[in-house]
Structure formats: C-alpha cells, structure tokens
Image (cartoon, rainbow, N blue to C red):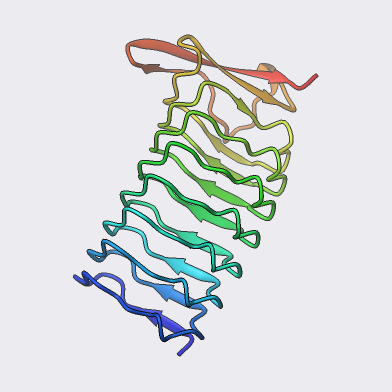
Length: 198
C-alpha cells in the first residue's frame, strides 16, 4: 500500500509502522494525540492537520515535499531533515521557534497564529507565499525572498510602534498582495515599515 486516506473520522490511534511503502498519508481531522511515522521513510505527503497532536517527529521522513500539520497542539517542530519540503503548513499551533534554514526548496510557508518571536527565511529564496501573521515577531527580513507574491505579517508586535521589514523595496513600492498599513496589537497601533536592504 502506497497511499492511505483516513481523514475525517474519529480515530484516536493509528498504527502505520508496518506500512513502510507509504508515500501518501492523509489522516487529518481525527482525534489523534500521537502519530508515529518513523518507519514511513518513503512519505512524500503527510497531512495530519486538525488533530490533537502535541508532538510530531518527521526526522526520518526525508522525502517529504508536503507537510500539513496545522491546527494541532505542537509546541516544537523540527524540519531540519526535511530538505525536500516545498510546502509547510504549521499554522494554529503553539510553536515558539521554527528553524527553516535547511528548507531551501520551500515555496509556501504558512506559520501564522503561533508564538514565534523570530523567523529567518533568508535561505528560502524560492518562497512565493509567506503567511506569518498573528505571532510575536519584532522584525522580519525578506530581502532574499524576491520571488514572493503573497506576504502576510500583520498582528505582530514589532517594537511596540513599528514592525520593521527589510525588503528589496521601500514603502513607496509595496507589492499588491503584501501587508501594508497598520494594526492594533496589545493596545498599541503598529505600522509596517518596509526598509530597502542596504
């Protein structure tokens, strides 16, 4: 068996340890509190979003190109071994850090609604979609991400007044699908400030 789809059930456990040929596993929208995919080294797609996972170990899944683990209860996520990833959806978790420095093939990263205080995407030069709003980011640098056409970063605190974003353009040339203007965070009005890289 190479593909298993068992999403939208009420599964509380799932044992795929013997299914070592799996390339696609879709087990989203269940009630899983744990998921062991350490034996599924051929996986290229893993959809386990909308469960109750508190941990997820994908260190053995080095072939993964698509990982959707959003809407769980993850506090950590190590994707340093998943260098083939092109899509990572980890939004609506409880992540405080996210290291994507090894994920240079990423084209889409959705990590919004977490507790990230910093995010380094300088190595992800293929990114076209970055959604990192609703975090605790104080600044961002997207100057190396010149392929971006969608960038959403509102509802971050910045320095309490401004969210500085180092980019390849300034405030007079903001692309159409990029966050602009301002928002209220913690009672403060935060303005976004795009600063051309020097």
